Image 1 (cartoon, rainbow, N blue to C red):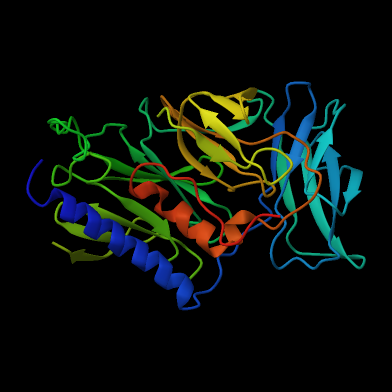
Image 2: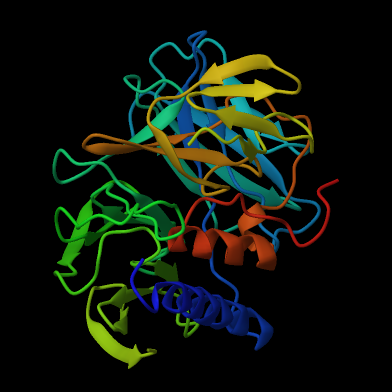
Length: 347
């Protein structure tokens, strides 16, 4: 291990965590989220739609769900729900477009959401990457201020770890790159960080977060001996010289007891398998749909966002509006994966 490695890593982690924490503690504007509607096909042929309950929603809010065969059609109202934020359409026929309309006291709120079901991807949403490589880390942040969480991809998936002995360090095979994709998979930008920074997971931390409270996230990353701050559009705005087999818990079913992921299988305690995924887990977060979490995996040339299709029995506010939870999601891109934690018990 080279001199200074451990101190650099610890300093980096403490500094970036302090930035994210300071944003919350000093009363920065809350992150604006849209309805986060997601729709996927279930294995039984049903169409499953899920959406966010927001902290600012009045207690009396209900949700009208409309389905249509064409995007230009208003569609037919299929349900009005007041106790949960998901809906299964068991016999969709040619319906593939769905709208979720929040209503309170007869008035429609302005946070309407819509989604199209992709029949080719049962149980997940696919984001195609710009090449046949695998993501190492995935960050979630709103880069363009539309209330939808976008994807920051760190690639390639190469690692060297100074904590593992003996002599685990190895020369970087390539330069690492940071890429940005909109929530719908549209490619935004890529930065090649060059040979001044190694590819190891602890040498190259990044954080995507709205640090200045303007509604658009910044991307904070380490490059060589410096830490660089980019705007959501990829413009450099500053730098400072500062000198998979373990189980992963996930809110997946109806209640507050988590399921867990081992390898490519999802279990409930103690060992009942309830689902399978493909790829390596790089992020777990409540990034779309109702309060249950998504499992984001990396495969060659794509990332997948797996979302539960288990019907809920009640509704809860989006977990990303919990301060501690949002902070934990922001720092998932700094090192090895740790599940985000809530600031208060989930009841």
